[in-house]
Image (cartoon, rainbow, N blue to C red; front, side, top):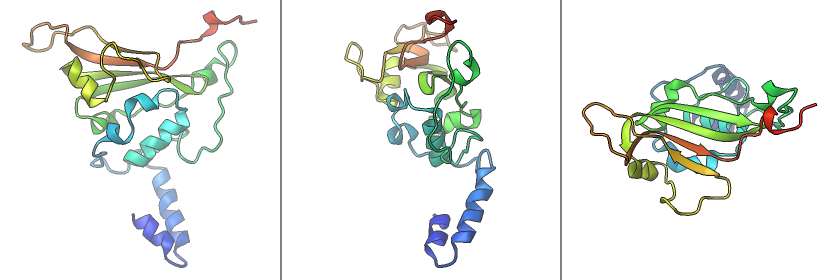
Length: 193
C-alpha cells in the first residue's frame, strides 16, 4: 500500500521503484505475512496447467515471496525444453518454500509441484495429519466423488490412509492428495532420435 501511495505522489516514483527493487531480493519479506484464505483467492484446481511464472507471480502477490527466476517480472515465458535432449528445461519450474506451506493452509505439511513443457502437470500435497477426505474436498473446493472434473484436471487422488496417533485406520481419512492436470510425457513416451 505504501508503494502505491508513494507512486501516486508527484516526484515519488523513484522512491517507489527503489523500495520495489529492495524487496525483489528478499526470499520472504515478513514471516508473519499469511494469506487470509489462499485457496479462496487462488483455487487449487485453477493452478494446474499454469506456467511456473504464473504460479511464481501468485506467490509473490499473496505472500511477497519472490522466486529468483519465476516471478512477476518474467515477461513472455516460453519453455524451450524437450523430453529427449533439453530435459532440464523441459521439467523446469519452481518449488514452494517450506515457510509458505502452513501459510497456504494450516493443515499442509508439504507441497510438491511437477512441471512439464512449461505447465504445472501435477501437485502433491501432504498433510500434517490424516484428515477426512470430505474435509479435504471442502478445504480445496474439490468436486464431489463421482462427479465430472474440470477440463484442466485429469484426476484427483487421495492417498491410502496412514495410521496416525491413536486414530483407527479408516478409508475415509488420508494424509495426502494428488491432483493431475495432464498425463506425463517423458523420453520413454516419445520417439527420441
